[in-house]
Image (cartoon, rainbow, N blue to C red; front, side, top):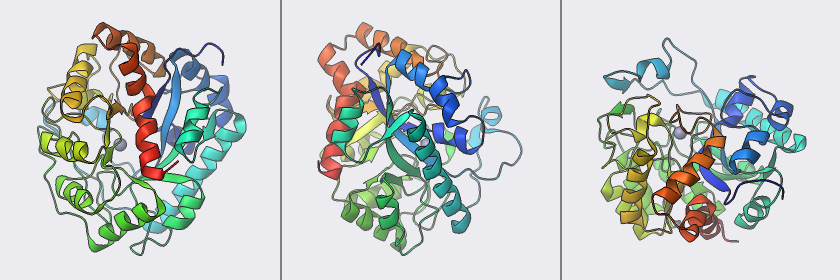
Length: 352
Ligand SMILES: [Zn+2]
């Protein structure tokens, strides 16, 4: 264990895999270090980024202006792309597992299948990686594929990434907006939750609309978890969680990971990088007020979002530690927020 700042952060969401899958970077470059993107191993070591949930996300075919262009100015309302074909999603997800293997072989990550493995990896020289699929397009309505995905190491699944699936509907990228848009889970969506419970795959509520959220809350026997979402009372974006949703999460001993995406942090919803640390603290205080100190962590969205300029990339976690200490967070709470609370909710969800 050499030179990693402590406590290390382990967080609920990053999109590093998409950089590999779109050929912007190789696994060897992630180990050696690159300037592009938010994560590589040397910068993880410098910032004390211990790892997190690595998302396999299937992008939609691109059409016109990028989200960064559309969301920089009002009205903040991005149309959702069309549903994906299952066979294409399946192939892309399998390529995602290939990228994870390549990263592990190269020595960038350690793939973790339970909370003890994450805990051990957080003392090592690689990033701890929990495998997450963001949007269940690769799974059919029978949910029969879940067992083989679990065997491949899958431990967390979002029924939707905003665009609709056969299971559920997601929230749009819209501010100001309520997350109460669209219908609840389909029959297949209810089966998906039951199967995830049976196999002990975490069901991620980030991106799910409010009726779907309520259906998961009614059905699931696991703690409710939103891996990368913020407080709607602070920033009324459809991607953030209302106080009612936060209270439901609290009742189950669940967890929320604070997302660093500027558009979900800033009260005005603009996708612009001038975000003072104090804005992150406002979300933190609100989440802790409802959930308590043991049920809040981070869900950076590294490599998937426009970050506050002071954060910049995963080396900005050094800035975040200073901001948290300056906000009065003591060492005990800092360790819980950085990774301790995630370890506990993973152990509760998966057994250990
Ligand atoms: Zn996301």
